[in-house]
Each structure stands twice: as C-alpha cells, then as structure tokens.
Amino acid sequence: MKFQDLQQLNAHYADELKKVASEVIDSGWYLQGKRVAAFENRLSDYLGCRYTVSVGNGLDALRLIFKAYLEIGTMRPGDEIIVPANTFIATVLAITDNQLKPVFVDPDIQTFNLDMEKVEMNITERTRAIVVVHLYGRCCWNEKLKQLAKKYNLRIIEDNAQAIGAVSRVEGFNGTYKTGTLGDAAGISFYPAKNLGALGDAGAVTTNDPKLAKVIRALANYGSAEKYISVYHGLNSRMDELQAAFLSVKLKYLDEENRARRQIALWYDTYLNHPDIIKPCVECSEDHVWHQYVIRTTRREELRSYLERQGIPTVIHYPVPPHKQVCYHQYKDLDLPVSVLLGREVLSLPISPVITESDVIEISSCIARF
Image 1: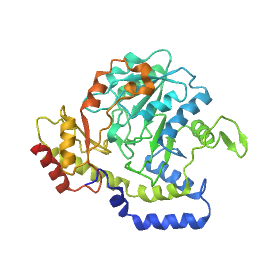
Image 2 (image 1 turned 90 degrees about the vertical axis):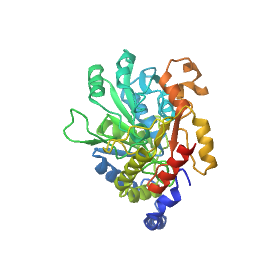
Image 3 (image 1 turned 180 degrees about the vertical axis):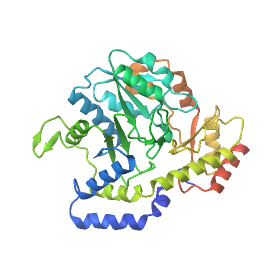
Image 4 (image 1 turned 30 degrees about the vertical axis):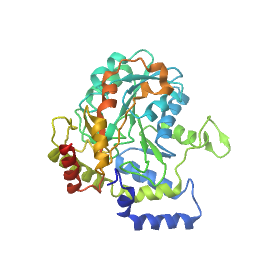
C-alpha cells in the first residue's frame, strides 16, 4: 500500500491528461497563455470569487498576498500577523519573508484548527491580519472570527492549501461559501498530493478585491503589469500552460473525489475503535474535504513502526511546530502546549480517493492487533 498512490489516482483521467499535454506541446505557447487564463476563470467560477491569479506554488501565493498588502499600504514591515501555531512552516515563511511578525496562537485540540477563543487576547495595536489555515481539509471559520476582524479592522487571509472544495455553513451567511472566498484573500497550493493536485508545482491566489488582484498579478510577473515596465520589486512566480491544462481536467473531478474522501473518513470512524486512539471528529457535512485523516496516540512511534512492518505507510503532519524550528529559534520558549502535544501525538493514515473499504478494514484491524 502507498500512502498516496498518485499514479493510480491520475490513471482515472490519464487519457485526458495526455491529450491536453499533447495540445499544449503542439501549441508552441507555454507561459501566460490561453490555458492559464481559462483555468483561472474556471476556478473563479467553481469557488465563487471574482479573481484568481495563478502563481508558481502555494508558498508564493501566500507570500504575494502579504507583499501586495505592503505595496498597497495596508501593512508595514514589523506589523503583526496572527497565525496558528501548528501549521506547516510555509504559512509562517510567507509572513516573515515580508518582514512581518508572526504571532502564534494555539489550536483547538478537537479540530486542530485555530482556537477562536484565544485570538482576541493576542490582538495588539500592531495586528493587521489573522491567518486561518483550513488544516487537513477542515474549514476554519465562524461568526466570532468575522466579528473580530470587523472590530479591529483586520484582514483575514486563508491558507487554503489543504481544503479546496470545502464549504462554510456558518451563522450570518446567506447561503454557503467555499474556502478561498471567505476572507479577504486566500492562497492555494496545487502540489501533486493535494486534493486538486497538478503534475508539478503550481498555486493560486483568490480574492474579491480588484486592487489586490491587480497588484498580485504584477508582483508575480517581475513587478510588471506592462512588459519591461516594473512598478514593484516583484518575483517570477507563474503557473505554466501545462499545469493549467492538467488542473482544468482534474477540477472536473474534484467534488466527486472529495465525496470519496468523506466516505473513507466514515469507514475509518466505523472500523477504527481502540481506547488508545483518538479519532478526528467525523462529520458528513461539506465543511471537511479530508485532505488528511489524522489520529492521535501517545504510543505513536511504536504504532507507526508496527504499521510499517505490516506494509501500511503513515505520515506525521507535523512533528515539529514552526516555533520549535531552528530557523525560528527566537520563538522556541513560547508557551504553546497544544501545538507541542499535537506534534508528539498526531499520525496521518492513508486517505485518498483510491482507498477502498477493505483497505480501511485492514488498516483498522492492524491497529487493533497492535
């Protein structure tokens, strides 16, 4: 068993992928062409946002959001950004790369997402934004977050790297909205292992703010909205035509594959029963797209080693929280007990649209035997 069998997954639409690849090769146009523009429009339509700006990867998507806010004047170097303490390090790198200061807030131990009850106590006069990470595919959003943003005039930036297709159904909304359209701007990753994965690196920014979208598009193209005329100190971060073509094919299957992930999570919830295992809260609602199925156990290393001997791969997302990383040594003494606890106990089990019920039964049985 593979933790995620991308070869088997992409085999479902391999003929379509090969067809569009051939078309891109034959076109002779490989950057900033019609296929990138078409994918941006398709993604905007799917999510329900006004603007999609394709970029090179998910980290650049977040970096460019902060960089654009600095150029616009919404933020200044040294301003504070509230961020979950248990996120992947890319979320924090995007902040510090722009000379902004991360303010780490512990997650809710049940959802693994930002604990909204701890946010306000960390807001200061230098706070300019709250980053919400829809971790493992679970939408992180509620009415309290909206109220805090309005009360303190803060931007809400979504790290939507893991939850594309998830939907919010919170109080105060007229209808439902997908992650990536809830805040002021969102960064998306299309890393191959994501629910919507390219066959290489790619990312996007989504927003309803026309000025922000315009500045980000220029920043991603050497700071230039007009060829050879650079207005900003920009980057080179562009999605190529080939990845856009692949993503346009795979976007058609995203909802179907997210439904499959929800079913797999339900199977785990049914068959995985052991007093030493803490399972994630399983809900059938569309606010979770199950990018990862993450359990907790105090005997993680023993269990992981045992499963590996049985041919069952697992992954730890993430063993070392950002504030304990060497590159952020200045934050190592922060008191963030939930993040540290999760770093010691979390273990991700295989979950992807190609996992079957019998696979889940076998994995659960192995855990029970251990």
